[in-house]
Amino acid sequence: MVFLGFIDIDGNVTDTWHSEVVGFTYFSSQGGYEVGSGGLDYRYAVFSDFGAPAMPYKRDLNVIYSDQQWLFNTGMMFHPSQWHTTPYATGARRAVQEDLAWFDETYFTGVTADDDL
Picture 1 (tube, rainbow, N blue to C red):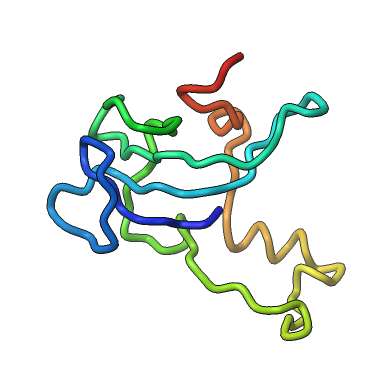
Picture 2 (cartoon, rainbow, N blue to C red):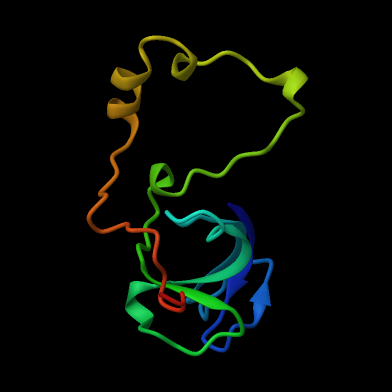
């Protein structure tokens, strides 16, 4: 997922946070369980307090708003030659992963508001 900017209620994009922000826009891989159902797409993520406003692109609704960075971990990409080994690359992966985050497979199904089912 690549963060592209913040959005207001009309889907206008801005580079900076302001009082009219209702979510954010991003570009990411969109996977499906069936062969050929994935791909790349732009999405508008709307925070849960703002309902289901019309947007220029497909929407992800009820996105959690939080100031806890572990829910939305931002970072930067490096060339693979600059990558460092992490605990995730070792046999300790499961223990480290459980300490850092959780994933609710029942709630996060991968289907978004405007997907054709």
